[in-house]
Image 1: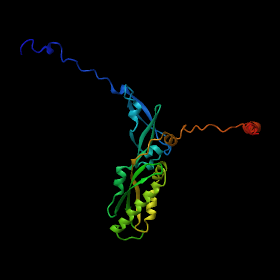
Image 2 (image 1 turned 135 degrees about the vertical axis):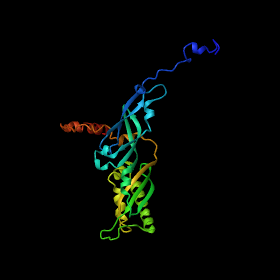
Image 3 (image 1 turned 45 degrees about the vertical axis):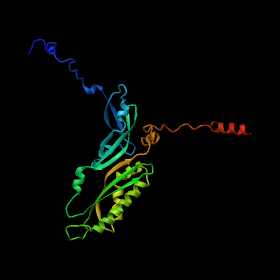
Image 4 (image 1 turned 120 degrees about the vertical axis):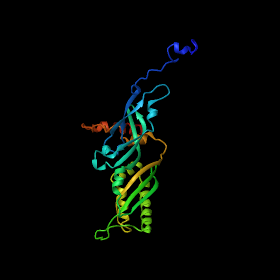
Length: 265
């Protein structure tokens, strides 16, 4: 190699050397996640976000973030651990992220545990619009059940019976979801009210068991309304004040009324 041709080697490496990488977590900050009032545990976790710098605002980066939580953690009940709840961050207040219901699903192991041989699996789905403008899609799963005094080992349903059951499922799901607000629908989904209703109404066609709403999706949301969200989060964290111990005097109570009457005269 000719001397003096490659000047960069003599000057000590590449022009504009590598920047020293700092710890990315130094630029992050933690926010608390607040679940809606329909769940017993309100402070359900924390989430990370990069601090506000320039045009990148931290609260804007958090909005629309979807979080997946276990229902057992939200309601302090281990028996509900087979349900996963999705919450979507709608609004930021200080260091609190106010969330709303975004979906529900059964865990993989629960769905696998339900499936067995010698029975018919029946599935159905339906779209419904709640009274507060949310369009939800419900997926239902159910299995045929052996009768009490049955000798035969299997309990397969005929295709005509399956069609009738599926029709009934869609009808019940549409009715149950279309006549209530989203928060009331969530309260129905937690204790499996819809599943029990399907089992009850399809008894005459074919007895069913393990009827669950296996998945709920929010297809369409109405225009964001902060007052409705604050209502959902029980504005004020339960600090409703104290009832008055000392009763007001009779004259003090009627003072305003008396002045209005005088003005009218």
